[in-house]
Image 1 (cartoon, rainbow, N blue to C red):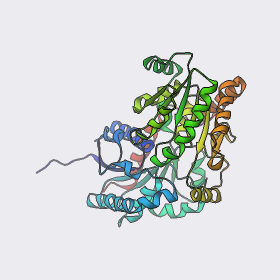
Image 2 (cartoon, rainbow, N blue to C red; image 1 turned 30 degrees about the vertical axis):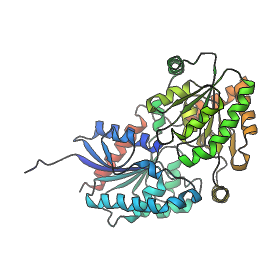
Image 3 (cartoon, one colour; image 1 turned 135 degrees about the horizontal axis):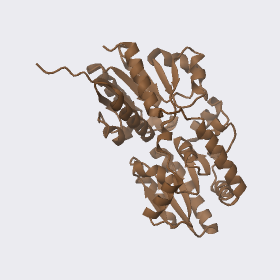
Length: 390
């Protein structure tokens, strides 16, 4: 007779590189905290696989964003939704955790025929930004939300949707200025070099839309700053696509090792970044940043109609003012972006104001002695216990 496996079985689903990092940190904390250990199944990337996940398929297939961008991929996405739901029903886990990417994760949860284990969603859907009434649908197939930002639980509490602020795991990988200097030394970048961080996104469609803008911005900056060096921290799913940035002739270093990313950002003097988690990472590194974004015309029009927040960047939302200049859609013009970057590079008072505001934003995300991943893992274990392990 085979010995009984007392380990928790946790099914985790992520759909993009930022979720892979969040998932890996959560899994590492669960591995330390669960009394009898944890075994994992689901969908994830290399970081989660390093913590013990056997992914059902390459999660890069799910990294699609925007209405028009999703439509051509719909048959494959629907097939993957069925595959994941079938895997859950074939071997029911003790908990299901979907991380970020709610379009895919929630589609899987809706397809499940039974609701016998807790369903936890990590990274609160932005109901505060658009379609607030969808919280009532989310309640039908999600049992608990783990939120990264302190203002989010109130939006879910108003609809009697359980939600806990656990802090942002980004705080666990902040690099110091000294680590930034060491990064420069390792990569042969002189201390008096002007280093621009270029982050065109983690999804292929983002990178392809934003890279031409970034290339022209770099060319404009290079005419004014002869000591310019471009640093591109990226992820494995789009590393081939970002190589176009190096075609400017400006010295360029491309980094796709996750463990180098924070130090790379700390080595930078300014940044141009796609709107997303990267802007918060840059705030943690105290890097003055210009935010850019472009999607298909109809997707952008629908976004303006549906979204009810003033800013795209979470840094600006938390600051309640535009500390990172934003250039979105038709305003995402290289000449305007380059001018804004030049101001952040050359105006010392402006740089100081931005950096001080970034420090204040990051301070909002702290939780005391516990790391955000430990708090999230503690909450997951509490929810499993409260739900009653099957």
